[in-house]
Length: 303
Image: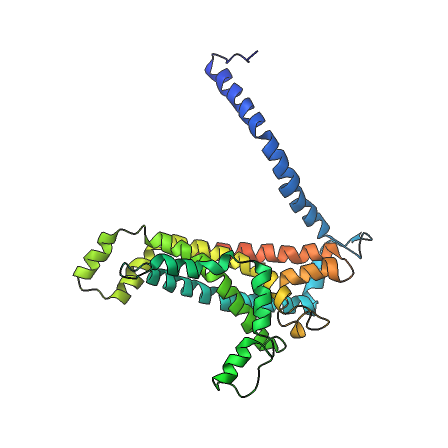
């Protein structure tokens, strides 16, 4: 028998409030079990340290240890280098490609858009293995550069700290540029064409139209891609793990491509497990993401 609906306004509102909460209660329970609880648990773990399950409460001891941990500082430095170098290159390249692929006179636009977007739907492991093969000492990249007489001897791409970073940055850029390009392209197609027509009639150059019209109109999308790319780069794991991992005992050339996420993995599963210290390192990523996201939103705020 159906529950009768109350007639008074207050009872009517309370009836639907209760039924609404009951309707979403299963979802809220799942979110609490799989999202809220792990966050709270990891925060509590970050206050403990010790091998495996033999942990003890250390309070802020893990934070003090971070400042004296050379491997952590190296991982933090590498991650910041990837962030500062790769993200601007990728976003600028995605913006330029989106502008080119948005030109009405371009033939086969659908084909070119598919080609640019295709890398971001490939398997992370598959393309990482491909890049590792291409940039190996006797790989196709060295063979090509030798054939063109650009270099006189093969470059140890994956064993040299500098060139290893270049390979990782190249791989990430190749993988994710098309992903960001799609956002810019979709936003460009929503800009009113009459704005460009008026600017063209006034004699404004294509470069000035791009800088003064396109980029300001894309500011919300640029902010979104900047924040998501920042988060993704700070959590970088797959490419360094699959391209440079296993080259020596540290997993990469002199820890040159060790990232914060890789260090968390090593602390949890590769070295003697220290889940408390690993949780502390993970909250460093959370803190950096929060600060950078706030600064990016602040910089993009309308004056």
